[in-house]
Every structure is written in C-alpha cells, then in structure tokens.
Image 1 (cartoon, helix red, strand yellow):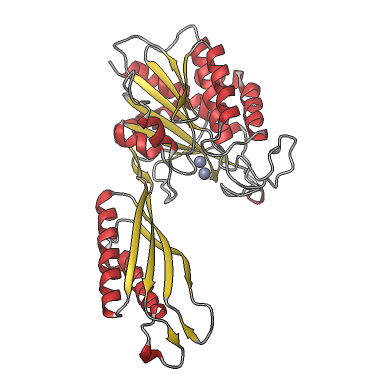
Image 2: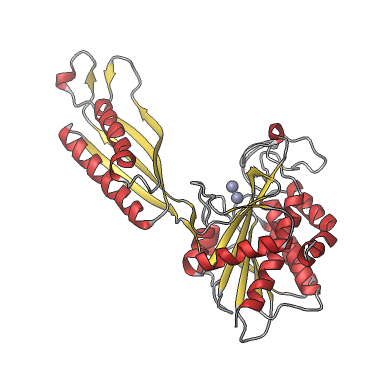
Length: 393
Ligand SMILES: [Zn+2]
Ligand SMILES: [Zn+2]
C-alpha cells in the first residue's frame, strides 16, 4: 500500500462525514453561501490563507510554499442541481428540489481532506498549493467568474488539476487521457418566419414548417458529410415549436439545438455550415430566419506531459486500478476555462457501484457514489502534488 493511500485512508471517516454533510444541504449555482462559509472555516482551521467571494461565492485557500517553486491549483466545484433526491439514505438532501446529483459534494470533501493532510504534514510541499473551490459549474459560469476575479494570479498558476468522480464507470476505474477529454458546447436557436394561411391553399402562403423540415434534414448532413470521419462532433436539435391547428399553415416555427466538438477548427466548421444551410435553405424556401448562436463552454484539453505524470501517480498508488487512457465524453465541464489558460489535467475517478442495478447516471434523482472513490482521489492528488513538487525545478 502506498504512503499516499495510507494517508488518505487515515482521514477516510472525516472525508465521508464532510461529503454527507454537504449532501444534506445542497445549494444551487452562485448560491453556495452556507457551503462556501463551511469550507472557508475549515481552510482557516488548517492554517491556510483564505479568500472568499472570488467569483461571487468561490473560496480560495493558499498553502504557501517556497517562492521560487511552482504554484499548483487543485480545483473542486461546489454547486448542486435543481432536482429532487429519490435516494433513501440517512444523509438525504434536506432541501426540497435540490440535490448533489453530480458528485460535487464528494469533490469538496476530497478537497478539504487534501488541504487538511497537506497542511498538517511535517513535510509540507515546497510548491504553493492553491485550493480553488469553484461555484456554478453546472451553469458553466463559475470558472469564468473566478478567472475574472483574478484566481489565476497572485501567485500565478503553473499547473491546474481537477478530478471528477464518474458514475459511468465502476469503482477501481480511472480515466486519464491526453488531449481533448470533454467536449466544447454551443447552443443555437432559429426562428423561421413565413406567411400563414389556409392549409388547403398552400400556394397563398409561405410555409415555415416545410422550410424547417428542410433545414433540420440538411443540418444532419454536417456531421455525416462535412466533419472529418476521424474527428467527432454532434449537432442535435432539442426543441421544435410551431403551429396550433391541423388545417392552418403557421406564421413561424422555432427550433433549438446544441453542438459538441473537441477542437476550434471543428467548432468553426459547424458554425459556418449551419449558417450556410440556414441562409441558403430559407432563401430557397422564401422564408426569413432569425438565427442566434451562443458559445457555452470550451473543450476540456489535458496537457500530454502532465497526463503521463498523472498516469504515473495513479500507478504509484499500487491499488490495481484500471487506468483508461482513451476515455472521452461529449459532456462538457467549465474546468475547460482553467485548462485553456494553464497547463493541467482533468481526471475521472470511477465511483459507480459494482452492482450495475444500483448505478444511476449523473443528474439523476437516484445518483449515488461508492464513497471509496474519494479515498482514491485524495491519495491520487497527494501523489500528484508530490510528483509535481519533486519533478520540477
Ligand atoms: Zn453535473
Ligand atoms: Zn459535475
């Protein structure tokens, strides 16, 4: 058993208690007031320099090392979801319609455990460790808000690390892939305006429903005909609204959708082809279009050298973990904004029950974790900090 895992094990009950405490009192994005106050109090107890209100409800704890050594950010997100808990456990959510159903409760407990262990250690890291407790991950705005408030500076970050407990995979599995591991995502909405009229006299109107059908079909050719088959992208339409009656051609139809991509070139290709298809098709169908495309999050890109060091750190734990170096998902995460500015890695730690029937997806009212995943994550972060601390000058 590795020294890091032994240290993580020594605090296991405390880690579990913290996680359950957070689980009982979930708070939504940018409203993590009680949560962040609790975290700030603990970090002060551990003797860290604490700053609150970074990115509205964010908390930063600094464990200062030697001035010429690197600064390593460890990032943990704090927000819960607007969802009713369906689990029957003694630490169930006490807040109606709110639940920690993504594992951010576990992330905070992992963060506090690492902060406690590193600050109490007789051999403190020589590097500076910046513990970043981020709000509002679920709405994709927390990382941006913390960056705007200067979290990347004073001291300036050299490395950024983050973990996500991951229920798609069982306990004992970890994901450490280099390059793009989570997708960037954009959303769009399109209002198609024609001229309404009698269903039996289509020649007197301009039908936005038929135009919408052409646009929708043509949008499906972007991924199948324009994107390189060895690349990945998604164009999905999630909403369509138009018309009231069976015999009336309506004035307008509204469509909404989402895009997923792993790199900027593909993102630009998707944007260009959507615009061309929408404008060209609507011109041919004699309809007008009001098209709005909003960028949501960037892809999460792992630094290749740091990914290798993360794999080494996982191996050093000697836990017989299954280390998956090819795992990717088209789900998005705003850790992307930190990794866009600072080299780093975002790792997945399997938290699913070995019993497949007990495993529910993230954002589900029955979501729960095998709490051992937290001990693995704490041990990994200790090992990774040590690796970066010794491996860099
Ligand atoms: Zn989530
Ligand atoms: Zn999450």
